[in-house]
Amino acid sequence: MFPIKPHWLNYIDGEWCDSPRSLTVSNPATGEPLATIAEAGSDDAERALAAARRCADNAELTRVRPAQRVTWLLRIAAEIRAVADEGAWVLCHENGKSLRDARDEFTEAARYFEYYAGLADKIEGTSIPLGDGYMDFTVYDPMGVSAQIVPWNFPVSICARSLAPALAAGNAVVVKSPELSPLGMCVLFQAIAKAGLPTGAVNLLCGPGRQVGARLVDHPHVDQIVFTGSVSTGQSILRSAAARAIPSVMELGGKSAALVFADADLPQLLDSVKSGIFFNAGQVCSAMSRLLVQRSVYEEVVGAVVALADGLHIGPGSDNPDLTPVISAGQLEQVEAMCRKAVDGGARLATGGGACRERAGWFMQPTVFRDVTPEMGISQEEVFGPVLVVIPFDTEEEALAIANGTEFGLVAGVFTQDISRAMRCARRLKAGQVFVNEWYAGGIETPFGGVGLSGFGREKGQEALYSYVRTKNIGIRVAGE
Ligand code: NAD
Image 1 (cartoon, protein in one colour):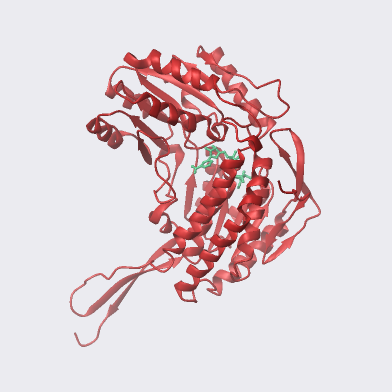
Image 2: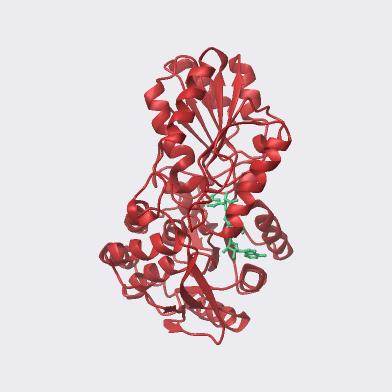
Protein backbone atom coordinates (compact mmCIF):
# COMPACT_ATOMS: atom_id res chain seq x y z
CA MET A 1 0.00 0.00 0.00
CA PHE A 2 1.19 3.49 -0.85
CA PRO A 3 -0.37 6.79 0.19
CA ILE A 4 -1.74 8.58 -2.88
CA LYS A 5 -0.88 12.29 -2.99
CA PRO A 6 -4.03 14.44 -2.96
CA HIS A 7 -2.80 16.84 -5.69
CA TRP A 8 -0.57 16.33 -8.76
CA LEU A 9 1.26 18.70 -11.10
CA ASN A 10 2.32 19.18 -14.72
CA TYR A 11 5.96 18.93 -15.78
CA ILE A 12 7.10 21.87 -17.93
CA ASP A 13 10.64 22.90 -18.86
CA GLY A 14 12.18 20.87 -16.04
CA GLU A 15 9.79 22.08 -13.29
CA TRP A 16 6.68 20.63 -11.65
CA CYS A 17 4.02 23.32 -12.13
CA ASP A 18 0.66 23.96 -10.50
CA SER A 19 -2.29 25.73 -12.10
CA PRO A 20 -5.19 27.79 -10.72
CA ARG A 21 -7.61 25.16 -12.04
CA SER A 22 -7.66 21.44 -11.34
CA LEU A 23 -9.26 18.25 -12.61
CA THR A 24 -10.62 15.53 -10.33
CA VAL A 25 -9.51 11.95 -10.88
CA SER A 26 -11.82 9.23 -9.52
CA ASN A 27 -11.42 5.61 -8.51
CA PRO A 28 -13.46 3.44 -10.91
CA ALA A 29 -13.79 0.66 -8.33
CA THR A 30 -15.67 2.95 -5.90
CA GLY A 31 -16.80 5.89 -8.02
CA GLU A 32 -15.22 8.16 -5.37
CA PRO A 33 -12.79 11.05 -6.05
CA LEU A 34 -9.18 9.95 -5.57
CA ALA A 35 -7.03 13.05 -6.17
CA THR A 36 -6.81 16.24 -8.19
CA ILE A 37 -4.35 17.30 -10.86
CA ALA A 38 -3.41 20.79 -12.05
CA GLU A 39 -5.35 21.48 -15.23
CA ALA A 40 -3.00 22.71 -17.91
CA GLY A 41 -4.22 25.65 -19.97
CA SER A 42 -3.09 27.24 -23.23
CA ASP A 43 -0.37 29.21 -21.41
CA ASP A 44 1.10 25.95 -20.07
CA ALA A 45 0.99 24.45 -23.55
CA GLU A 46 2.86 27.51 -24.87
CA ARG A 47 5.58 27.18 -22.22
CA ALA A 48 5.99 23.43 -22.75
CA LEU A 49 6.22 23.86 -26.52
CA ALA A 50 8.68 26.75 -26.21
CA ALA A 51 10.89 24.58 -23.98
CA ALA A 52 10.75 21.64 -26.38
CA ARG A 53 11.40 23.94 -29.35
CA ARG A 54 14.46 25.42 -27.63
CA CYS A 55 15.76 21.94 -26.81
CA ALA A 56 15.23 20.76 -30.41
CA ASP A 57 16.67 23.92 -32.00
CA ASN A 58 19.78 23.68 -29.81
CA ALA A 59 20.09 20.03 -30.86
CA GLU A 60 20.55 19.17 -27.20
CA LEU A 61 19.70 15.52 -27.78
CA THR A 62 21.63 15.13 -31.03
CA ARG A 63 24.80 17.17 -30.69
CA VAL A 64 25.94 14.60 -28.10
CA ARG A 65 27.28 11.21 -29.16
CA PRO A 66 24.43 8.72 -29.61
CA ALA A 67 25.93 6.73 -26.74
CA GLN A 68 24.81 9.55 -24.44
CA ARG A 69 21.19 8.97 -25.48
CA VAL A 70 21.71 5.27 -24.73
CA THR A 71 22.84 6.23 -21.22
CA TRP A 72 19.88 8.58 -20.70
CA LEU A 73 17.36 5.97 -21.82
CA LEU A 74 18.88 3.23 -19.66
CA ARG A 75 18.82 5.59 -16.66
CA ILE A 76 15.15 6.29 -17.33
CA ALA A 77 14.45 2.54 -17.45
CA ALA A 78 16.22 2.00 -14.12
CA GLU A 79 14.31 4.88 -12.49
CA ILE A 80 11.01 3.49 -13.80
CA ARG A 81 11.79 0.09 -12.30
CA ALA A 82 12.52 1.82 -8.99
CA VAL A 83 9.04 3.43 -8.86
CA ALA A 84 7.11 0.54 -10.41
CA ASP A 85 5.40 -0.66 -7.20
CA GLU A 86 4.26 2.79 -6.17
CA GLY A 87 3.29 3.69 -9.73
CA ALA A 88 1.28 0.48 -10.10
CA TRP A 89 -0.63 1.27 -6.93
CA VAL A 90 -1.54 4.73 -8.20
CA LEU A 91 -2.43 3.47 -11.69
CA CYS A 92 -4.57 0.64 -10.32
CA HIS A 93 -6.59 3.07 -8.18
CA GLU A 94 -7.09 5.82 -10.76
CA ASN A 95 -7.71 3.53 -13.72
CA GLY A 96 -9.51 0.52 -12.25
CA LYS A 97 -7.13 -2.00 -13.81
CA SER A 98 -5.72 -4.85 -11.75
CA LEU A 99 -2.65 -4.20 -9.65
CA ARG A 100 -0.87 -6.98 -11.55
CA ASP A 101 -1.63 -5.36 -14.92
CA ALA A 102 -0.70 -1.92 -13.60
CA ARG A 103 2.65 -3.33 -12.46
CA ASP A 104 3.09 -4.88 -15.91
CA GLU A 105 2.55 -1.45 -17.47
CA PHE A 106 5.49 -0.02 -15.55
CA THR A 107 7.66 -3.03 -16.42
CA GLU A 108 6.67 -2.64 -20.05
CA ALA A 109 7.44 1.08 -19.91
CA ALA A 110 10.93 0.28 -18.60
CA ARG A 111 11.34 -2.31 -21.36
CA TYR A 112 10.49 0.29 -24.04
CA PHE A 113 13.29 2.52 -22.77
CA GLU A 114 15.73 -0.42 -22.63
CA TYR A 115 14.75 -1.62 -26.09
CA TYR A 116 15.11 1.79 -27.75
CA ALA A 117 18.29 2.47 -25.75
CA GLY A 118 19.66 -0.52 -27.64
CA LEU A 119 18.82 1.18 -30.93
CA ALA A 120 19.68 4.81 -30.14
CA ASP A 121 23.27 4.38 -31.38
CA LYS A 122 22.31 2.26 -34.40
CA ILE A 123 20.23 4.67 -36.46
CA GLU A 124 22.38 4.15 -39.51
CA GLY A 125 21.86 5.48 -43.01
CA THR A 126 22.83 3.81 -46.26
CA SER A 127 25.48 4.54 -48.83
CA ILE A 128 24.09 4.69 -52.36
CA PRO A 129 26.33 3.92 -55.36
CA LEU A 130 26.06 6.56 -58.12
CA GLY A 131 29.19 5.65 -60.07
CA ASP A 132 32.56 7.37 -60.17
CA GLY A 133 32.56 11.03 -59.26
CA TYR A 134 29.84 10.82 -56.59
CA MET A 135 29.45 9.92 -52.96
CA ASP A 136 25.87 9.60 -51.83
CA PHE A 137 24.44 8.62 -48.49
CA THR A 138 21.41 9.02 -46.25
CA VAL A 139 21.22 10.31 -42.69
CA TYR A 140 18.27 10.25 -40.30
CA ASP A 141 17.41 13.57 -38.67
CA PRO A 142 14.97 13.79 -35.75
CA MET A 143 11.61 15.36 -36.54
CA GLY A 144 12.22 18.11 -33.95
CA VAL A 145 9.31 18.59 -31.56
CA SER A 146 6.96 15.64 -31.20
CA ALA A 147 3.49 16.22 -29.68
CA GLN A 148 2.17 13.00 -28.21
CA ILE A 149 -1.42 12.51 -27.10
CA VAL A 150 -2.14 9.52 -24.89
CA PRO A 151 -5.45 7.70 -24.14
CA TRP A 152 -6.57 6.46 -20.74
CA ASN A 153 -6.63 2.68 -21.25
CA PHE A 154 -2.85 2.00 -20.98
CA PRO A 155 -1.53 5.48 -20.20
CA VAL A 156 1.87 4.47 -18.83
CA SER A 157 2.88 1.90 -21.42
CA ILE A 158 1.44 3.85 -24.37
CA CYS A 159 3.26 6.97 -23.20
CA ALA A 160 6.55 5.03 -23.03
CA ARG A 161 5.84 3.35 -26.37
CA SER A 162 6.04 6.70 -28.19
CA LEU A 163 8.34 8.64 -25.89
CA ALA A 164 11.20 6.10 -25.86
CA PRO A 165 11.74 5.90 -29.65
CA ALA A 166 11.19 9.67 -29.97
CA LEU A 167 13.99 10.36 -27.48
CA ALA A 168 16.19 7.61 -28.93
CA ALA A 169 15.98 9.43 -32.26
CA GLY A 170 16.75 12.80 -30.64
CA ASN A 171 13.35 14.52 -30.56
CA ALA A 172 12.07 16.84 -27.82
CA VAL A 173 8.60 15.85 -26.68
CA VAL A 174 5.45 17.36 -25.21
CA VAL A 175 3.06 14.70 -23.93
CA LYS A 176 -0.60 15.22 -23.12
CA SER A 177 -1.99 12.78 -20.57
CA PRO A 178 -5.64 11.67 -20.54
CA GLU A 179 -7.90 13.57 -18.14
CA LEU A 180 -9.41 10.36 -16.69
CA SER A 181 -6.12 8.65 -15.79
CA PRO A 182 -3.14 11.02 -15.64
CA LEU A 183 -1.53 10.14 -12.29
CA GLY A 184 0.44 7.01 -13.25
CA MET A 185 2.01 9.09 -16.02
CA CYS A 186 3.07 11.65 -13.39
CA VAL A 187 4.88 8.84 -11.54
CA LEU A 188 6.46 7.82 -14.85
CA PHE A 189 7.64 11.38 -15.39
CA GLN A 190 8.97 11.63 -11.84
CA ALA A 191 11.23 8.73 -12.83
CA ILE A 192 12.14 10.31 -16.17
CA ALA A 193 12.92 13.64 -14.47
CA LYS A 194 15.67 11.92 -12.44
CA ALA A 195 17.56 10.67 -15.50
CA GLY A 196 19.39 13.92 -16.27
CA LEU A 197 17.97 14.69 -19.74
CA PRO A 198 18.49 18.24 -21.06
CA THR A 199 15.88 20.64 -19.65
CA GLY A 200 12.85 20.91 -21.91
CA ALA A 201 13.44 17.56 -23.63
CA VAL A 202 10.31 16.09 -22.04
CA ASN A 203 7.19 17.89 -20.85
CA LEU A 204 3.90 16.57 -19.49
CA LEU A 205 0.56 18.35 -19.54
CA CYS A 206 -2.81 17.22 -18.31
CA GLY A 207 -5.75 19.16 -19.64
CA PRO A 208 -8.93 18.88 -21.63
CA GLY A 209 -8.38 17.38 -25.07
CA ARG A 210 -10.40 19.98 -26.93
CA GLN A 211 -8.33 22.81 -25.41
CA VAL A 212 -4.80 21.70 -24.53
CA GLY A 213 -4.72 18.76 -26.94
CA ALA A 214 -6.12 20.86 -29.78
CA ARG A 215 -3.64 23.67 -29.00
CA LEU A 216 -0.73 21.22 -29.19
CA VAL A 217 -1.69 19.79 -32.54
CA ASP A 218 -2.33 23.23 -34.07
CA HIS A 219 0.85 24.84 -32.84
CA PRO A 220 3.56 25.97 -35.28
CA HIS A 221 6.31 24.66 -32.93
CA VAL A 222 5.12 21.08 -33.45
CA ASP A 223 6.87 19.05 -36.16
CA GLN A 224 5.09 15.75 -35.66
CA ILE A 225 1.94 14.41 -33.99
CA VAL A 226 1.64 10.98 -32.40
CA PHE A 227 -1.93 10.24 -31.45
CA THR A 228 -3.39 7.18 -29.79
CA GLY A 229 -7.12 7.32 -29.19
CA SER A 230 -10.50 7.27 -30.83
CA VAL A 231 -11.20 7.52 -34.54
CA SER A 232 -13.20 10.75 -34.28
CA THR A 233 -10.47 12.56 -32.32
CA GLY A 234 -7.83 11.17 -34.69
CA GLN A 235 -9.74 12.52 -37.67
CA SER A 236 -10.01 15.96 -36.11
CA ILE A 237 -6.26 15.95 -35.32
CA LEU A 238 -5.49 14.88 -38.88
CA ARG A 239 -7.27 17.98 -40.15
CA SER A 240 -4.85 20.09 -38.07
CA ALA A 241 -1.89 18.04 -39.30
CA ALA A 242 -3.07 18.47 -42.90
CA ALA A 243 -3.31 22.25 -42.51
CA ARG A 244 0.41 22.37 -41.69
CA ALA A 245 1.38 19.25 -43.70
CA ILE A 246 3.15 17.66 -40.75
CA PRO A 247 3.63 13.90 -40.35
CA SER A 248 1.52 11.92 -37.89
CA VAL A 249 1.25 8.50 -36.39
CA MET A 250 -2.37 7.48 -35.81
CA GLU A 251 -3.11 4.55 -33.50
CA LEU A 252 -6.90 4.39 -33.45
CA GLY A 253 -9.59 1.87 -32.62
CA GLY A 254 -10.46 -1.63 -33.74
CA LYS A 255 -13.10 -4.34 -34.07
CA SER A 256 -10.75 -7.25 -34.32
CA ALA A 257 -11.84 -10.76 -35.27
CA ALA A 258 -10.60 -14.18 -34.21
CA LEU A 259 -11.30 -16.92 -36.76
CA VAL A 260 -11.93 -20.21 -34.98
CA PHE A 261 -11.79 -23.29 -37.21
CA ALA A 262 -13.17 -26.69 -36.23
CA ASP A 263 -9.69 -28.07 -35.51
CA ALA A 264 -8.78 -25.29 -33.02
CA ASP A 265 -7.47 -26.32 -29.61
CA LEU A 266 -10.34 -25.35 -27.29
CA PRO A 267 -8.39 -24.75 -24.01
CA GLN A 268 -5.86 -22.65 -25.93
CA LEU A 269 -8.71 -20.68 -27.51
CA LEU A 270 -10.41 -20.08 -24.14
CA ASP A 271 -7.19 -18.68 -22.65
CA SER A 272 -7.07 -16.28 -25.56
CA VAL A 273 -10.74 -15.32 -25.20
CA LYS A 274 -10.18 -14.57 -21.52
CA SER A 275 -7.29 -12.21 -22.18
CA GLY A 276 -8.58 -11.11 -25.59
CA ILE A 277 -11.85 -9.57 -24.44
CA PHE A 278 -11.89 -9.47 -20.64
CA PHE A 279 -8.36 -8.17 -19.93
CA ASN A 280 -8.52 -4.49 -18.86
CA ALA A 281 -12.33 -4.83 -18.91
CA GLY A 282 -12.20 -5.05 -22.70
CA GLN A 283 -10.87 -1.49 -22.96
CA VAL A 284 -8.14 -2.48 -25.36
CA CYS A 285 -7.85 -1.16 -28.92
CA SER A 286 -6.71 -4.60 -30.10
CA ALA A 287 -9.33 -6.52 -28.08
CA MET A 288 -10.75 -9.72 -29.55
CA SER A 289 -14.20 -8.22 -29.88
CA ARG A 290 -15.50 -10.57 -32.59
CA LEU A 291 -15.28 -14.35 -32.38
CA LEU A 292 -16.00 -16.03 -35.73
CA VAL A 293 -16.64 -19.73 -35.18
CA GLN A 294 -16.97 -22.54 -37.72
CA ARG A 295 -20.49 -23.91 -37.54
CA SER A 296 -19.55 -27.53 -36.70
CA VAL A 297 -18.04 -26.42 -33.35
CA TYR A 298 -20.21 -23.34 -32.87
CA GLU A 299 -22.45 -24.64 -30.03
CA GLU A 300 -19.50 -26.16 -28.18
CA VAL A 301 -17.47 -22.93 -28.40
CA VAL A 302 -20.39 -20.65 -27.47
CA GLY A 303 -21.16 -22.86 -24.43
CA ALA A 304 -17.53 -22.77 -23.28
CA VAL A 305 -17.19 -19.01 -23.80
CA VAL A 306 -20.41 -18.28 -21.87
CA ALA A 307 -19.22 -20.56 -19.02
CA LEU A 308 -15.89 -18.72 -19.02
CA ALA A 309 -17.64 -15.31 -18.85
CA ASP A 310 -20.00 -16.45 -16.10
CA GLY A 311 -17.11 -17.85 -14.06
CA LEU A 312 -15.02 -14.67 -14.04
CA HIS A 313 -14.16 -13.18 -10.69
CA ILE A 314 -15.23 -9.52 -10.76
CA GLY A 315 -13.77 -7.02 -8.33
CA PRO A 316 -11.60 -3.98 -7.66
CA GLY A 317 -8.20 -3.95 -9.35
CA SER A 318 -6.42 -4.11 -6.00
CA ASP A 319 -7.78 -7.70 -5.56
CA ASN A 320 -6.30 -8.80 -8.92
CA PRO A 321 -9.63 -10.21 -10.18
CA ASP A 322 -10.36 -11.48 -13.70
CA LEU A 323 -12.59 -8.53 -14.55
CA THR A 324 -12.14 -4.97 -13.31
CA PRO A 325 -14.40 -1.91 -13.63
CA VAL A 326 -14.50 0.28 -16.71
CA ILE A 327 -12.89 3.70 -16.49
CA SER A 328 -15.88 5.98 -15.81
CA ALA A 329 -19.62 6.28 -15.33
CA GLY A 330 -19.81 7.69 -18.86
CA GLN A 331 -17.97 4.69 -20.31
CA LEU A 332 -20.27 2.30 -18.43
CA GLU A 333 -23.35 4.09 -19.77
CA GLN A 334 -21.96 3.97 -23.30
CA VAL A 335 -21.22 0.23 -23.12
CA GLU A 336 -24.66 -0.51 -21.66
CA ALA A 337 -26.34 1.65 -24.32
CA MET A 338 -24.56 -0.25 -27.10
CA CYS A 339 -25.71 -3.55 -25.57
CA ARG A 340 -29.32 -2.32 -25.33
CA LYS A 341 -29.21 -1.16 -28.95
CA ALA A 342 -27.85 -4.57 -30.00
CA VAL A 343 -30.70 -6.38 -28.24
CA ASP A 344 -33.25 -4.01 -29.80
CA GLY A 345 -31.67 -4.71 -33.18
CA GLY A 346 -32.13 -8.48 -32.78
CA ALA A 347 -28.79 -9.64 -31.33
CA ARG A 348 -29.21 -12.58 -28.95
CA LEU A 349 -27.75 -12.00 -25.51
CA ALA A 350 -26.08 -15.18 -24.19
CA THR A 351 -24.93 -13.63 -20.91
CA GLY A 352 -24.43 -10.24 -19.23
CA GLY A 353 -25.59 -7.12 -21.04
CA GLY A 354 -25.73 -4.60 -18.19
CA ALA A 355 -23.91 -2.95 -15.31
CA CYS A 356 -23.26 -4.85 -12.07
CA ARG A 357 -25.82 -2.81 -10.14
CA GLU A 358 -24.99 -4.35 -6.76
CA ARG A 359 -21.51 -2.79 -6.88
CA ALA A 360 -20.65 0.82 -6.06
CA GLY A 361 -18.10 1.41 -8.85
CA TRP A 362 -18.36 1.25 -12.64
CA PHE A 363 -18.53 -2.49 -13.23
CA MET A 364 -19.94 -4.00 -16.42
CA GLN A 365 -21.02 -7.64 -16.57
CA PRO A 366 -18.97 -9.84 -18.87
CA THR A 367 -21.18 -9.96 -21.92
CA VAL A 368 -21.52 -12.38 -24.82
CA PHE A 369 -23.84 -11.95 -27.80
CA ARG A 370 -24.46 -15.02 -29.97
CA ASP A 371 -25.87 -15.60 -33.46
CA VAL A 372 -24.94 -12.06 -34.36
CA THR A 373 -24.92 -11.10 -38.03
CA PRO A 374 -21.93 -9.27 -39.52
CA GLU A 375 -23.87 -6.15 -40.50
CA MET A 376 -25.35 -5.44 -37.04
CA GLY A 377 -24.00 -2.36 -35.27
CA ILE A 378 -22.58 -4.50 -32.46
CA SER A 379 -20.49 -6.37 -35.08
CA GLN A 380 -19.21 -3.19 -36.68
CA GLU A 381 -18.69 -0.61 -33.91
CA GLU A 382 -16.01 -0.59 -31.25
CA VAL A 383 -17.63 -1.05 -27.81
CA PHE A 384 -14.51 -0.67 -25.64
CA GLY A 385 -15.88 -2.83 -22.85
CA PRO A 386 -16.08 -6.55 -21.89
CA VAL A 387 -18.47 -7.37 -24.73
CA LEU A 388 -17.90 -10.21 -27.20
CA VAL A 389 -19.96 -11.01 -30.27
CA VAL A 390 -19.93 -14.56 -31.63
CA ILE A 391 -20.69 -15.07 -35.32
CA PRO A 392 -20.99 -18.45 -37.06
CA PHE A 393 -19.40 -19.21 -40.45
CA ASP A 394 -19.15 -22.21 -42.78
CA THR A 395 -16.15 -21.72 -45.05
CA GLU A 396 -12.71 -20.12 -44.85
CA GLU A 397 -13.74 -17.70 -47.61
CA GLU A 398 -16.81 -16.63 -45.65
CA ALA A 399 -14.79 -16.19 -42.43
CA LEU A 400 -12.29 -13.94 -44.21
CA ALA A 401 -15.07 -11.87 -45.76
CA ILE A 402 -16.71 -11.32 -42.35
CA ALA A 403 -13.38 -10.59 -40.63
CA ASN A 404 -12.41 -8.05 -43.29
CA GLY A 405 -15.92 -6.60 -43.46
CA THR A 406 -15.49 -3.63 -41.10
CA GLU A 407 -13.88 -0.25 -41.59
CA PHE A 408 -11.21 -1.15 -39.03
CA GLY A 409 -8.08 -3.26 -39.43
CA LEU A 410 -5.95 -3.30 -36.30
CA VAL A 411 -5.26 -6.96 -35.43
CA ALA A 412 -6.81 -10.36 -36.21
CA GLY A 413 -6.37 -13.95 -35.06
CA VAL A 414 -6.56 -17.44 -36.51
CA PHE A 415 -7.12 -20.54 -34.38
CA THR A 416 -6.40 -23.79 -36.23
CA GLN A 417 -3.96 -26.70 -36.22
CA ASP A 418 -3.55 -26.40 -40.01
CA ILE A 419 -0.47 -24.26 -40.69
CA SER A 420 -1.31 -23.80 -44.35
CA ARG A 421 -4.76 -22.51 -43.49
CA ALA A 422 -3.26 -20.22 -40.84
CA MET A 423 -0.79 -18.80 -43.38
CA ARG A 424 -3.46 -18.34 -46.07
CA CYS A 425 -5.69 -16.48 -43.64
CA ALA A 426 -2.84 -14.43 -42.15
CA ARG A 427 -1.95 -13.14 -45.59
CA ARG A 428 -5.51 -12.23 -46.50
CA LEU A 429 -6.64 -10.67 -43.22
CA LYS A 430 -6.88 -6.88 -43.36
CA ALA A 431 -4.93 -6.06 -40.20
CA GLY A 432 -1.60 -4.66 -39.07
CA GLN A 433 -0.87 -7.74 -36.96
CA VAL A 434 -2.15 -11.33 -37.06
CA PHE A 435 -2.00 -13.72 -34.12
CA VAL A 436 -2.03 -17.47 -34.73
CA ASN A 437 -3.24 -19.65 -31.84
CA GLU A 438 -2.60 -17.01 -29.18
CA TRP A 439 -4.23 -13.61 -28.97
CA TYR A 440 -1.66 -10.91 -28.14
CA ALA A 441 1.23 -13.09 -29.32
CA GLY A 442 3.96 -10.52 -29.88
CA GLY A 443 5.42 -7.84 -27.66
CA ILE A 444 7.16 -4.52 -27.58
CA GLU A 445 9.54 -5.89 -30.24
CA THR A 446 6.80 -6.47 -32.84
CA PRO A 447 5.48 -3.63 -35.05
CA PHE A 448 1.95 -2.59 -34.21
CA GLY A 449 -0.54 -0.36 -36.00
CA GLY A 450 -3.57 -0.38 -38.20
CA VAL A 451 -5.05 -0.12 -41.63
CA GLY A 452 -8.32 1.62 -42.53
CA LEU A 453 -9.97 3.45 -39.63
CA SER A 454 -7.51 1.80 -37.22
CA GLY A 455 -4.92 4.33 -38.34
CA PHE A 456 -1.50 4.33 -39.90
CA GLY A 457 2.16 4.41 -38.93
CA ARG A 458 3.72 1.76 -36.74
CA GLU A 459 4.65 1.75 -33.07
CA LYS A 460 6.82 -0.87 -31.28
CA GLY A 461 9.77 -2.77 -32.67
CA GLN A 462 12.65 -1.42 -34.72
CA GLU A 463 10.22 -0.20 -37.32
CA ALA A 464 8.75 2.41 -34.96
CA LEU A 465 12.05 4.24 -34.75
CA TYR A 466 11.56 5.32 -38.35
CA SER A 467 8.31 7.08 -37.40
CA TYR A 468 10.45 9.53 -35.42
CA VAL A 469 13.05 10.49 -38.02
CA ARG A 470 13.21 12.11 -41.44
CA THR A 471 15.46 10.70 -44.12
CA LYS A 472 17.89 13.16 -45.66
CA ASN A 473 19.94 12.24 -48.70
CA ILE A 474 23.32 13.88 -49.21
CA GLY A 475 24.92 13.68 -52.66
CA ILE A 476 28.50 14.83 -53.21
CA ARG A 477 30.25 15.50 -56.49
CA VAL A 478 33.81 14.37 -55.97
CA ALA A 479 36.22 16.48 -57.99
CA GLY A 480 38.86 14.73 -60.10
CA GLU A 481 37.11 11.35 -60.46
P1 NAD B 1 -10.07 9.93 -27.07
O1 NAD B 1 -9.89 10.11 -28.52
O2 NAD B 1 -11.32 10.40 -26.46
O3 NAD B 1 -8.90 10.65 -26.27
C1 NAD B 1 -7.54 10.36 -26.50
C2 NAD B 1 -6.71 11.56 -26.11
O4 NAD B 1 -6.99 12.62 -27.02
C3 NAD B 1 -6.99 12.11 -24.71
O5 NAD B 1 -5.77 12.50 -24.12
C4 NAD B 1 -7.87 13.33 -25.01
O6 NAD B 1 -7.76 14.32 -24.02
C5 NAD B 1 -7.26 13.82 -26.31
N1 NAD B 1 -8.14 14.66 -27.13
C6 NAD B 1 -9.49 14.67 -27.16
N2 NAD B 1 -9.92 15.57 -28.08
C7 NAD B 1 -8.83 16.14 -28.63
C8 NAD B 1 -8.61 17.12 -29.64
N3 NAD B 1 -9.62 17.71 -30.27
N4 NAD B 1 -7.35 17.45 -29.97
C9 NAD B 1 -6.30 16.84 -29.37
N5 NAD B 1 -6.44 15.92 -28.39
C10 NAD B 1 -7.69 15.56 -28.03
O7 NAD B 1 -9.82 8.37 -26.79
P2 NAD B 1 -9.93 7.62 -25.39
O8 NAD B 1 -11.38 7.51 -25.05
O9 NAD B 1 -9.00 8.23 -24.39
O10 NAD B 1 -9.34 6.19 -25.76
C11 NAD B 1 -10.12 5.19 -26.31
C12 NAD B 1 -9.86 5.05 -27.79
O11 NAD B 1 -8.47 4.93 -28.03
C13 NAD B 1 -10.46 3.79 -28.36
O12 NAD B 1 -11.07 4.07 -29.60
C14 NAD B 1 -9.26 2.87 -28.57
O13 NAD B 1 -9.45 1.90 -29.53
C15 NAD B 1 -8.19 3.83 -28.90
N6 NAD B 1 -6.86 3.28 -28.60
C16 NAD B 1 -6.03 2.90 -29.62
C17 NAD B 1 -4.79 2.33 -29.35
C18 NAD B 1 -3.86 1.91 -30.45
O14 NAD B 1 -2.68 1.74 -30.18
N7 NAD B 1 -4.33 1.72 -31.68
C19 NAD B 1 -4.39 2.13 -28.03
C20 NAD B 1 -5.25 2.53 -27.02
C21 NAD B 1 -6.48 3.12 -27.31
